[in-house]
Structure formats: structure tokens, C-alpha cells
Length: 275
Image (cartoon, rainbow, N blue to C red; front, side):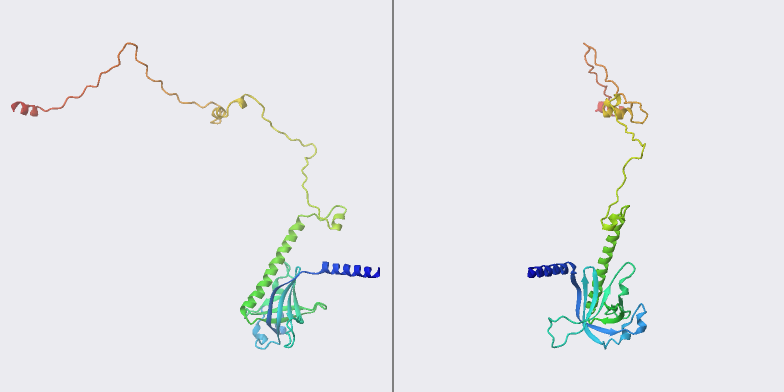
């Protein structure tokens, strides 16, 4: 019985761990990244410069990952692996930068571009236990790696902003609770409903067409009777009557129009007789 109880406890603990486990995915990783110490005077500036870090001599060459855990994002810096260590061994954490983007806090608060090079950045790292913060410079050997690093962070920022906008729209369409506050306490949203009831004493007037003389007439006749808007019938032009038929016993007239005589000059006739 005690063994069965212990198994039940272990199973419940495993179920709790599974329910609290966060989905983790790697958005970007680079095996060779240079780490630099940032001078104190550049921490307060908006445009750090990599040439003041002595870029030829980083204090460490480690690896970097952008890790997303559920909706949280971290820029994680790892120490370099020793030469005799197997590559399957997980690297040692050096520092991490939580990227907590909101509408008030942009990405530049956590990761800033250097003014003199697109391959160098200044990031704000934070100790998870003590919440102490510091700034570290990082540099990528290849420009394409630096571009992918910044693009991955920008994609995450767009994702978080869309989530915040969707949450704001959802909160705007839900009431804050009922009058007794039980719905708000239980977290059950109540949607707004429109009151479509008529006010007290209000009436509705509906005009119904009944069968009468005007409705029984064809539609064409009604349109003709009110074509000009005056209600008078439209006047149709009259066609003239055909000619009367000839009287009985009278033959039809066969007279033709006289043909004009040829105009012959006297000179031509004289020539004909003399010949």
C-alpha cells in the first residue's frame, strides 16, 4: 500500500511539472561571438561605438542564443567550451538579457546598435536572482550573422505587439464584471448585450397596402397614369386615317402623267428637211 501511495505521489508531481513546463524554442544561435567590456561613459549614451571597446581584443569568445520560452524571450551568452570537453555537454551560462518589450519599452532598451558598425551591439544583461544589471558589448565575425540576430529579435517584437493588441481588443469587448462582482472574481467574462426593447408607451406604426382600384390596375397603366408626376394620363399622338376606298363601278384611274415633248430646235429640223 505504501509503495502504491508513493507511486501516486510521484505521478502527481510529474503531472504538475509537465503542466508548469514552458515551451522553449531557439530563434537564433551563433557559435562564435566576441564579448567586450563597455566603458562606463557609453552606458548612458544612445549610440554606443565599438571602436572604444578595442574590437581586436575581446575578453571572451563564446556562443549566443535567442531563446523563447512561451511568450518570454532571452538573449543568452555562454562561455566557450574547453578543448577536451565533448560537444554534447551543455555550455556554461555566462549572462542573459531578458527582452521584455511593451508599448513603452522598445527593443533598443535591451539591444542597441553601434553607430560605427552593423556587426556590433550593446546588450543589457540581468542577474536572474539579484536583478542586478550590466552592459556587455557583442560582435559577430560575419555581417550576415549580425543581420539574422537583429531580424530574429524584431520578429519576436512584432509577435509580442500583436499579442498585446489582441488582448486589448478582447478586453475592450468584455465587461469588467457584474454588479455584485462575482463574475469578475471568478474570471468569467460577460459580453455586452444591446437593449432592443421599446420604451414604455412607445408604439410602432405600420402601413399596409390593401386591395383597391389603383392596386388592381396593371403596373404599366399605373406608370402611364403618373408618368409626369401630375397624376394625369399621358397623351398618345393620333395616327392619320388611311385614304378612302374607290366607289363601286368606277374603274381605277389609269391616266399617266403627260410626257414632256422633246425640245427640238428649229435649226435641227431645217437641216433634216433640206437633206
